Amino acid sequence: YTFSHAITRKPSRSIIAGLRAVDTGTPDLGVMQAHHVDYIAALRATGAEVIELDALEAFPDSVFVEDTALCLPQGAVVMRPGAPSRLGEAAEMAPHLQALYGTVLRITGDDSYIEGGDILTTETEILVGRSARTNAAGVAELTRLVADWGLPVREVFTPPGVLHFKTDCSLLDAETILSTRRLAASGCFAGYKMIYVADGEEACANTIRFNDLVIMPAGFPKTRATLDQAGYKVVEIGNSECAKLDGGMSCLSLRF
Ligand code: CIR
Image (cartoon, rainbow, N blue to C red; front, side, top):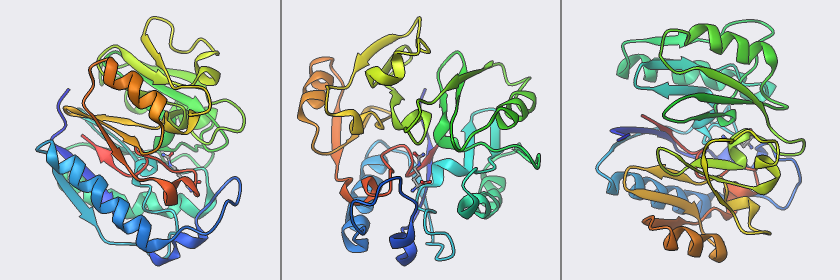
């Protein structure tokens, strides 16, 4: 599958107030901006058009655009983030999707919560991990909305203590998934070819395959070597600042 577009949003000064499970220090906006520039350059290097949205000061986590929508060739679905401080980010994204897509659907149920970081789409199915941010009602509503899109939704579970399903996995090609062992242990990837991140390098499972590139966070040499050996064309991008906010390569863009 070739991606022709990506949407990103510039980090805001308010990023220092971004959500985090554990406080490991205040993110440095200047360093984050530099990493963000490198990330966008890598996306563009594959020939895709990257739409860079302006920073949203009112939403500290809004650089993590992935959580606001699901973008597929069939259409886009605006999410309903489970983090109260992030709920409004979805409405900010909707008009930009409307400009690019014929079909834009929305998760609207008062009790439905779902974030894009919990959704992994493969060639055959849409896996949605229930998590602290994504609940059964959210998964059920998405299942109804995309019922005629030709890809079944399969509910799976994000392990406790892991922010999102895709914090711990990514799709490397039509049949291959990069995952942590703790996530794959649930059996959710039966039938897929697996590559595991090295022990101690769990934080690099949030990697993306974007056209001919595999874009991974910098500083995970064992997993990098495994991906090189498997024949992937790997680019490393600094992620030190987003990592302080539990964010990684997938979170920073919507890709379609
Ligand atoms: C949050 O907790 O919502 C942000 N600090 C990080 C979001 C990362 N997004 C993603 O994994 N898709």
